[in-house]
Length: 493
Image (cartoon, rainbow, N blue to C red; front, top):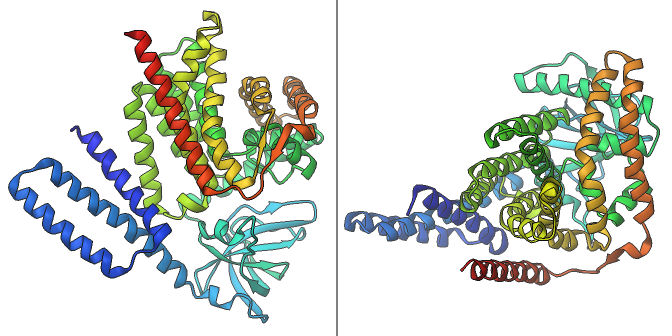
């Protein structure tokens, strides 16, 4: 057994431990009993030099580590002192530093503050004015509340994965200081937010909604500028994943970039490095959000797997990246849909993309190879992510395959022209107005497709989708893929 395969089994064991503990909540005495037994068996098998049993013993240890990592996370949540003040009905005053870029809407804004005394993070929903900025030191006074929960959605779980257990709605806010205390990372983020704001102003100066909203979403990761009508149309047409810094978005973008660079004549390793640089430049520009970083890690692993060119190696890389991220934050597995979509999109491209691409190429000409790669990559990622989207959001776009074929090939060009236009506008506005023309043409096509296909019949809504259906969907997908592979092997023979 190769070292990479052993590491793969170790990672799988660790992830399995996290899943088991998240679902069943194992008592401490059971964990310690199994731990002692596993250590004794490892010592015995080391003495007997039985390698397979020794590896199995370490797999048990890694699974126990997954269990303990979840328990450590649960302890950290229960030990948060500020959470005990939630829903008390009393006004509470807290001083702290804004640690996120304020999300500014038309009538309100929201941001996170790190409190000085408790060290906890609070999500603040505030009035639109006055303006506050990243790293401003402020004092908030209001009622501390627990995030809401409904039958359809748990905002509490959604925030919990980011270490936020308390929210404060429209408090009185007093600015204490605008003298920012910088570390290396916070200094970088502050400068990036300033650049992002300049790009945002340039877009709004040259485009009106919905063009500006689409472009802001694509190149800056801003969904706040979109009105409900635009969001609804994106959901109906199955194009919402394009207007966001999501896992699926990054994975598809990585695949498109690799295909384009290879088609332009670059060697595969050169295409990998150029694609990697562009992906991380994009994530940095969008503000280095936690979801963006996670999507970037998955995208980087996918690109590396493409360079290796072996399905087994790609799977091991993706599972390794997944295990590392869960070691840092085990709550991602069940409470972060973006993390789930990133992982599944990668699996789709590694496992399903070669099958779909091979089937399509049988009916297309050789000069359409680049287009086939883009289409097959999009479908592969979507097929693997649809069950999770349906389980979490309860609707599925019936028109999505058509709209993605029509839109995905131009996403790259919208982003390229959008970046060039935004950068130019920061220095010379007349040049920006000229460069905005090709961007406007692609956006016009995007809006035309969006309006043409966003009809009520194009989306199917499901109520109370069960986890049993979710498991069954992926089981059926695995069976179908296995059958296709078997048929392909029989043809080769």
